[in-house]
Length: 251
Image (cartoon, rainbow, N blue to C red; front, top):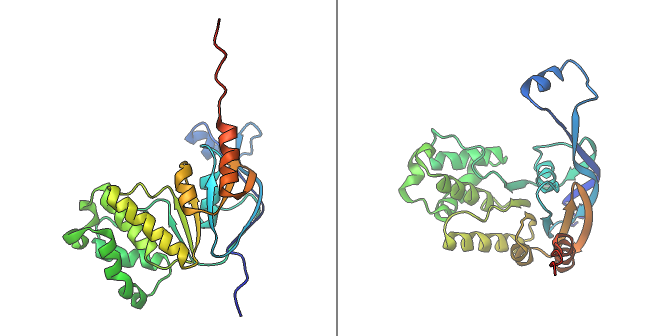
C-alpha cells in the first residue's frame, strides 16, 4: 500500500524569540520574568502541507522567517505554538560543515556525518566512494579536515548530504559551493534527487534558481505566509511587493 502521508505539515505554527540587549539581561531572565523584554515573531500562525515528491521554493526578504521554517523541519528549532510534523529522513544543506571533526580525516568524517543521519556502517560503505568522487578532494580525503579550506569542507558536506538518498532534502542557497563547474554538478545532483521522488525545499533569493528547481513556491513576509502556489505566480507577487516606485523628478 502506497504511503499517502504528507512529507511536511505545519499546523498554525508560531515561533517567538526573546531579544536580549546583553548577556546579563539574558542571565537574569532565567530567574526573573520581565515584561520589558522585546519579542521577535519569526513565524506567525503558519499552516502549510508539502506532499512527498514536491519541490518547493521558500522565498522572502531577509527576516521573513525562511531559515526558521527550515530549522523546524530539520529539528534544530521548535515552535512556540502549533505543531510541525515531518515524515521521512531529512538531509539539510544549511550549514554544510556542521558536524565535522577537524582532527578526523575527510573519509572518517563521511562516517561521522552518516552516523548523525542515522545510517549504518554497511550502508555508508556502499556510498563512500560515490561521496569521495563527488567531492573531488583527491588525496586530501585522507588528511585531517583542519587542513581543508572552507570551500573544501563545504564540498565534502554537500557530497555527503546529496549522496545519502534522503527522503527530504532541505537546501538554503548551498549551491554557492566551489567553482562554476562544481556548482553545475551540484544543481544536476539536486535535479536527479527530484527525479527520484525526493521532497525538496529550496530557499533562495534567486528567481532563476527557484524556477529551475521548484514547481511551487511559498512566500513569507515578516513571519506570515502571504502566498502559496505555482512558482511563476509566487515570483510575480514577490516582485510586485519589492518594486520600489521611483521618486518623481523635480521640475
